[in-house]
Image 1 (cartoon, one colour):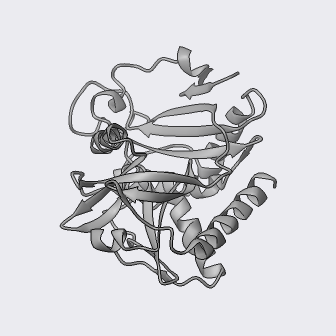
Image 2 (spheres, one colour):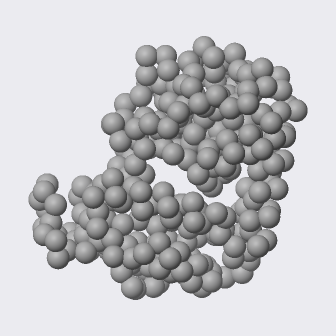
Image 3 (cartoon, helix red, strand yellow):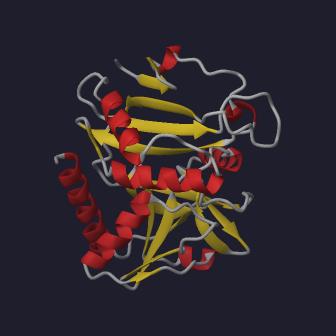
Length: 282
């Protein structure tokens, strides 16, 4: 199939799959999700994404009767139904189940609904340069949970697009947290700096890999939030996500940034590309 979708045991092309109107994802956004990429039918670091998915489910108190191993096997099985060459984005989510609309959780016998969508995507094999804008933080206190409630992120993403940019940088009282659908980091004086893990940011999988690779390559890491002023003065600005891996920013709010430490930047980019190639060729 060109696209593959799954809902509680039913498999069909994405365009043909239907979801009950009483799914709590429809009227409450009461669910969590994760996303990974595949290259030639090899999913990049799937275990890391599945671990984060189960962590989000636990924090949201959504019962899920699959094990990590069962979910991983199902995702890999669905990926194999894709037409060649097997380069894809794999998205999956669970909602709290199907039940009449009520704010309280449904009864214990209501099972979580699992939705999977797989569609073709070109592998992010080249370093891309992007432009950013800043926007005030308008989100809630659970940014660390990968919930499907993403309206502030959607509005910020559209604001960036309208400005001819690829990402929006959230900030509060002059302190940068993350982007609308990415983590953000800076290089300054040879040190990689990024906001610490907290309810204010998503624990990005690519972020986790990047910090580990920096340490492996003797690049100091500083997990301390930085300011808008530090962002504008950075030697390089890096934006990371599971679908795009690493991108580098050329401007913020129309002002040029970065371009001062290509050596450290490319050390990280090359190390990540090596990690990616080795992982999808296993």
